[in-house]
Image 1 (cartoon, rainbow, N blue to C red):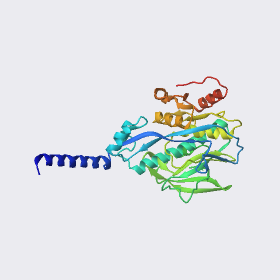
Image 2: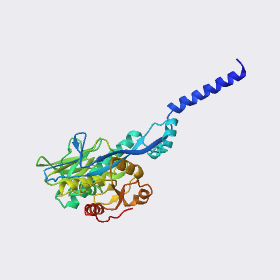
Image 3: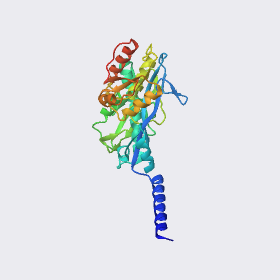
Image 4: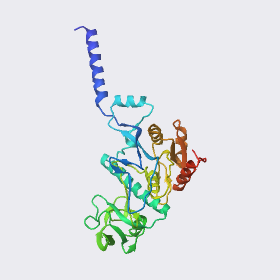
Length: 338
């Protein structure tokens, strides 16, 4: 075979090899983009996102949508080039989403734990705002919990380590001076019957005190609130969950029939925290039909720089800011924007 022919064949084989590698070999990058958005006032997969039992509820209208960011993993070089060219995607190093010192399963578990915490904080913030009598409950047991077989999901916690508890924070405070391996007494109520259990505390790498292994939550004293939304992870739906609980438990409706979306963490006192990926969340909200977006105050600069056409931004630092803004929107009054 002539030298020129060998050159052409070699170049062709090299191009083929590069094409195979580019199409099949993963690279350490992920793509971020707009994720699903869900109306927290509605039903998803046959289950209400916010369900209330044992308390008076009221009709709601409009939307209070929580928003998410999609993460596309296991990208090839060709995938990366395609996402780089897309206007609604951002390619970032995989380590920014999946830290190298954690397994994918650990990251997923952390996201699930943060989501569960956001549900608890949403209920606490809503019930505190509504000034309803409450009780502390076991919202779940952690994996490998020392309390397994002694406490159950739904138990009402009355005292921990000889200290009465009236909030999830009080449960944590009751364990502050304890150590792993220490037995503590938990007084609880189940099915209207009071009982006590001795739990030998476990350990956790992120705290020196003993681990009870329960996720304390809060419920109305005479009712029950359940927040359900599949496998969504992370803490950023807290604000929208809180508003949905308040909307269902108060006369009238918060949205006035508007399509409101938003994001933001929330703590038990109603402070709204910043989140990541807000440009993608706003894109998803606008594409779904939202006309108003509730923005955590610390995200306002980024949100204003990426605001999609037709989406009114509302600055929110506390739960009260969101409630005040929704009142103003219903009355066609100005609101504080970004």
